Image 1: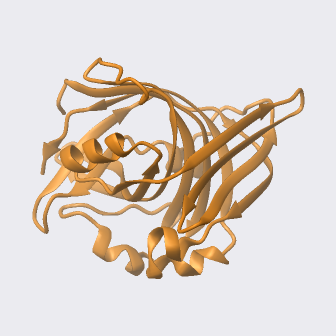
Image 2 (image 1 turned 90 degrees about the vertical axis):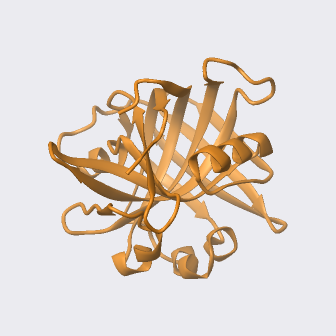
Image 3 (image 1 turned 90 degrees about the horizontal axis):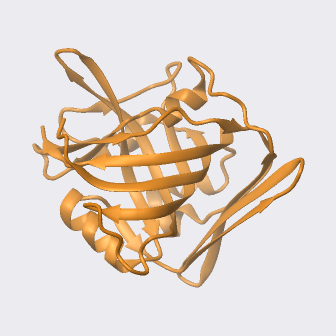
Length: 238
C-alpha cells in the first residue's frame, strides 16, 4: 500500500440502498484479478448518497470544491494476496455536481464520474433525522432519501451493514489486464436505523439498460451510516 495520501475529506450521512443482484450482470464490470465478493452467498449492488466535506487534494483545498454531494452505484469485490483477501468496491457510476472533480477522478483513477445538477438536505429533530440526495438527468430529478432514528447504533460484527461499509479498497479497470488499487481508510461507522425511505431513481437513464430492472425492484436493505473523516491513498497497479 502506498503511504502517500491523495485525498482527505469527510464522508457524512451515507444513505445506502442495497439490492440483491445476479452476479452474472456484473461480470463485465469486474476488474482483472478481482472477483465478486458475496455476503451470505448473495451478490449486492448499492445505490449510495452522501456528502463530501472539507475536501483536500494533496492537502490543498480547491475553492468551490470543498463541500458537495455524491451519488454512486457500486458493487463489492475481493482481491487475494499472500496474506489473505482484500475486500473492495467497484464503482459503476459516480455523480457529482462539480465537473473538475469528475475530470480529476476519471483522469487519475479511471473512475466513472459524471457531473450534473444536484442538491441535498439534512434535517434533524429530537426523535428522527431526514436525509435526502437529489440529482437531475435528462430533465428528471431523481432522489434517494430516508427518515431515520436520531440515535445511532454501533455497527454489529458480522452484519450486512458491516459487509457493505467495511470494504476499504477501491478497484478500477485501466485495461482488460491492468487494475488500479487504492486504499480508503476510515474508522467503523455508526448506523442509524431507517424508519422510512423513498427511492425515485430512473436506473436506465442514470446507469444504463442493464440496470433498468432496479427501478421497480425493492431493495433488500436501506440504512443510514454516520460516516467519518476518510483518507484516500495513491493508487498502485495489480
